[in-house]
Every structure is written in C-alpha cells, then in structure tokens.
Image (cartoon, rainbow over all chains, first blue to last red):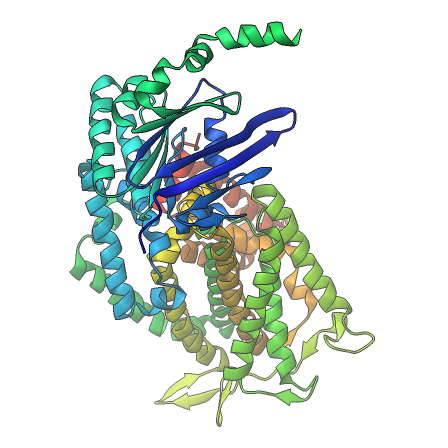
Length: 265
Length: 358
C-alpha cells in the first residue's frame, strides 16, 4: 500500500472562547515531507490552531486526520504518542534541569521501563537507559547545543533554548514537528542557521508545521503557506502566490479591517 | 560543607564512609541500650518516620504534589496489620502476609485519593488531601458500629509481634552472648528494610519514571506535550508513596502492640511533611536526616530542658513538655529562614527556590 499523500488533513476546525471566535471553519492539508507555514497577524488564531491540534483545547467543530487516522478527543500526551511534537511560543523547557535531561525526558514516550525496571535495573532497563542517554546526546549535537549538554536549560542563550526545545520535540520521534515561532527573538545569523536546521530536519524525513512572523524565513523555507486572519483561512498556496494575494496584503496592512468596519456600521 | 561534597567524587572515600556508617548503625542499639531501652524505642520510631518521610518525598519531593493527609496511608497499613494479626477478629496471619496486604491496601487508597485530585495543584490539592486524611481517621474512630470493625476510639490491642516460626521479635533472648531485647531485634529488622527502601528510592529517582516526575513538577503542560501520561505518572507517585506509608504502618502496629485513631492525627501528617521540607525536598539523604533529627530532637529536649533550667536558675521554671515544642518550633522557623531549601537540598529544588520560575 502506498502512503497517502497527506500527512495531516484538517477539516472545518472551529474554536470559540466566550465571545471570540478564535478559529472558524479552518481546513488545510499538510503533505509528507513538506515545510508548511502558518502565518497571520497577531491574534489571527495561529497558536489556537496549534493548541487544538495538539490536544490542549478540544475543537468545537471539525476534525483532524493524521497519518490516515482521525485525532478525536485525544489528550496532549496521546497526540504526542501518535507522532505530533511541538514547541511553545513562550519557551517551555524544564528550566531547572540540564539540557541533556530535557531531551532525555523527550524520549519518555518511545521507551518503556516502568517501576520494576527502575528498581531491579535489569539488563533491559539498563540498555534502554543507555540508549536514551546516547540518543539524547546525539540530538543535542544535531541541533548544535551539545557543548552545553550539562548546563541548565535556563542558563542557555535564548537561541540555544529554542534549539533545545526542538531537540526535545525531536526526541519523541515525531512524524510532524510543529514549531511555534522558533525564530522569535533571534538575530539574523541565528535565524539563518535555524533555516539550515529546518532544512536538515525535513531532509531527514520529518514534516514541519511552522508558525513564524519572520517573513523572510517563511518565504525561503516553506513549501506552502496558510494565512489566517481573525480565525479564518484567507489564503493558502506557495509562498510566492500568497505574497501576491490582495487579501493577504490587506490583512497585514489593515485595509480589510477598515472596509469591514464600514460594512458593519 | 565543601569537603563533604568532595567525598562524593572519591570512590574509595565514599566506600570508607559507607563502611563507617554501617558499623555505627550495627553497634548503635547496644550503645543506646546502655542508656536505657527507651532510646532504642526512639530510634525505632525514628526509622519508621524515615520510611514515612521517604514515602511522602516521592509524592511531594519527586512529583511536586503537596499532600497534607499522608498519615492516612500509615493508618491504613497499621489497621490492616492489626486486624489481620490480633485477637480482635481472632486472625493471626503471619507478618509476611499481613504487612504486604497493608501496603497493597494503602496503595489502593493512594490511587483512590489520587484519581479525583489529578487536576488540582498546590493549595487546592493540599486541602483535598488534608480532608482525606481526616476522613480516614474519622472512619477509624466510628467504624465500631453497626459492625465492630475498628473498635472505635478504644483502638486495637494485643497485636501480634513479628514472628518467624518460634523466633518472636517481642521476646528478649541471648544470641552469641549478647542481650537482644525486643526493640533491638526490631531495630535490625527495620534497618534491613530501610536499606531496601533507600535503594528503591534512589533507583526510582534516577530512572525514566523519576525523570517523568521531575518533568511534571517543572512544567506539567510541557510534560504532557512531550507525551508523558501525567495521569498515570501522578497516580504512580501517589501509589508508591502510599505503599511505603502502609508498610511503615504495619511495622508500627507490630512494635507498639496497640493502635488507636489517636496515633494518626493531622499533626502527624504535618510532622512528616516538616521532615521532608526541613531535610530537603527531593533529596533522599536530606529527607532521611530531616526525619532522624525531627524524631530525636524533641526527645532529647524532653531530657535536657529540665536539668539545664535547674543548672541555670536553680529550679524548674517551665515544664519541659511546654518548652520543648516551643524550642522545636523556633528551630524550624530559623531553619526555614536560613536554609529554605532544607538541610541537604536537592540540586534541582535549590535552583527552583533561588530563581522562581517565570
């Protein structure tokens, strides 16, 4: 059987918080091996979409089909087990643990030693522990923070914390890596090397969903882009096409807003 | 403090230190017995507190879940043993059956407490666990009607001591020329169990499960996003902590021979929590030191406060019973002011206290 082309298909996703319609009827598909961008002005619903996808919120309507199977009412940990790993807009590392420990915790979901293994330290548990350690270190090397493996997460430079979060997410062996503004707060050099990392991750077989405000990064790295505004999808397509879309330009420049105000009063 | 830490880096010194501690612990009861069996009993009760503190440390120290009703599990373990090995129901099961059963039931109660409180944290969790502890005690107090299960406030008595064949832990006897009193026999038994419990704790902390507890304590949202099933991992912490409490309870039953709901009041929960916090939440050795100190200091004060007053003022001004808890409380306050992370803080906990998470 051949793999279906779409890794993730979203249909009619809606989410309301009180009087705010954070997402209305959002649909899109992400193909295997893509870097898929998610952009939009502040408050457009990008992070809400992430939270609905990763099980932090339950959507009011719509469904996600991931790797051929629907994600229905799954808890965040089940979503991670199914193969979607994420990072957070405001970095959420285990601050007081070392970089290495952070990534080792990411291995939790793909390893099995329980209480019995922990207490008896039998051959299986010891081998697994060694493998966790080894893999965690490899991932730190992969993202380029291996030198600070034993440093505390909170003492890492800002850019390194972002990279560490990516390493921790990769430790869960995701099929889809969802990054929430990984370049936020990075300087141009750091952003450029982040682009290299994203390309590496895609080349090594992980599909990426990327929320980002840095348009240069989005346009250079993303295969396709989805644009949200006020919780609605206003455009989807290649980076080049989306840039030319008048609705997108209006959303970013605020033209549409003035029109809407006129229309409703 | 510095050279104490350096010892850890030198394996040979470490083993020498361990050997020294082992020898001291092995001859300790005979030295204490020369001052009176009372001190051997205090030591035994200190070991029971170490069990409790280590059990509570799993819940509070490792997983970061504040539990103010921990003594309930001690009570469950104690009552299960007492009911299965006393004239009350005329059951006299051997301890190697009654003790694990007590631990198992305590474990079940741990899960029962954990399940409805999974979404609670901090203060809210503390209140619920506090209520749970009281509920258990009140049940024990009132389950004498309509069917007499717990014998109410009168408690259960003539509880069997530990017995292996003809060897009873309660009976004094001479072995290889040494006088082994009941408490001394229990001491060695408790010490053996303690070694096992410490090893279990160390290994749990440094394992996949221990890391998951740490992750939950640090950031629950991130932990879940990393695929950690926070429900199961929290329940596991409650269950493990409760089991240790249950074992300690059974031992308490056997060595006392008498238990009543009076032994399981809120103050006991607070005491065990103080041991964990004072010693250093999350640090196994710190917690042990905390438990030993808080068990011995009040007893030592009871002994010393009287004579010191007579020496200083020529007569007894304040009853020892009154002043010893006063001094004890003062010591706790000073301790928390000057070493808030505990006597031997866990590395991670110390960092958390130094710079509160954003």
